[in-house]
Image (cartoon, rainbow, N blue to C red):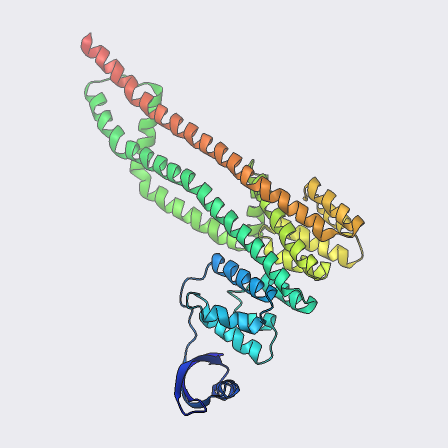
Length: 395
């Protein structure tokens, strides 16, 4: 698919110029002919995204199409309306999809030409919506989920800013004291032959070690971080890291809640759209980020494919929270699995922000305590010999 700048003439002979996307000039000629125009010349231009595409762009896209389709506007007109708005950073992609839909492709198939913009979850939901005739409902539910995901992402980023700044400042302060402040005081203490207490001797030893071997420490630190990042990129490393995260106090509980929320949101959306349960789990398996939980979902999918119930399949892993298991069991018994999963999703939507706030409060408390202990140790190591020095001078 390419974008063409064209010049054409209408029935009265007037010149018409514009931009259109098509597979080639032959299709462009056909598209213009359908609009009552005769192609004179065309110049191919590369398709480019006109701005930074973020999660909010996809949310707005789903909201717009859901509203348009609910109002009885055809899908093709909705796509062209959003493309011609002029403010959308994905106008070229929309023009491409509109051209594909106009040529007879389904909306989900047209999305496949832009996999980075439309993930597999979005494409699968749209395909299910087209097959069941409920595309507007699917798009509205999808927009709500994507909006929740963006809000959660922003909240997690905001929660990490303060501890990161404090820790960076603490490390910088400690290095400043060890490399510059303490050596100056040490010169004074040696000249005056002041007896150094244990905290001061420990700080001096640490200062000397950092001063003598800072290049080795730097190389070792960079190498260790690089090795850890490389190892984490492997399947075994990623799984081990994810398993460790789940067992970290506070952090592990928060991570499990976030993954359960992802699972329930996506599984409920897919299942309510008419997707088979095994296909739902196959898609959810790719969306869940923690490898340990992903293996649990994969194992459950295989067991369900062999005829086991979803409750029994999820129970085999021993990782799913009791509340999730109860709601899944209730949904299977009543035949309303999508509603049960929606209850789970709403529960986590309420609990995750509160859990993040509690975790952030504990992290901040730990950072403050560490900062106080560090500054207290430094102060004691400096002021104790100074106090003894002043006593010697007075004596």
